[in-house]
Length: 175
Image (cartoon, rainbow, N blue to C red; front, side, top):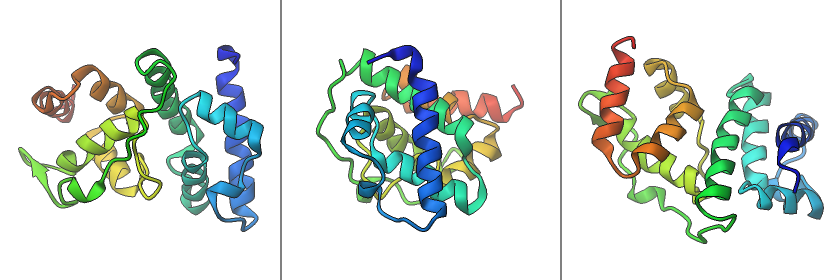
């Protein structure tokens, strides 16, 4: 694997997925050949990640390539340097996450995005969930947070919800 080429290779696969989705092709499992699938896996990614970005890109342009690259670069870094390039084999259960309407200290969506971001960081999101979906984007915009920045915060904070809450409150205050 050539690490230096990750952004350009990711761009090629992202554009490929967008073109296929725009042309009406559906189903993440049909988007990439074996070599591309192997490259994605070696970088801690899945075809579903690219499919979700393509679907939202075609539907409205968000989160867009820049955010996708930043998010997946954090995930890739964690996968390679913390997980040693090995998937956990765990799939998170979104039914155990807080309700979408839940708030933490008055901050909506925060209780739900905490386990979701941790699952994204570890590569444990089920195919039915997307980090950076419409609800996540609303949270990020309301709190002036970059999606990748939040993922990096989750990495630094580990399971310390209070550290994340303090950081988000500080950001909300205009810092």
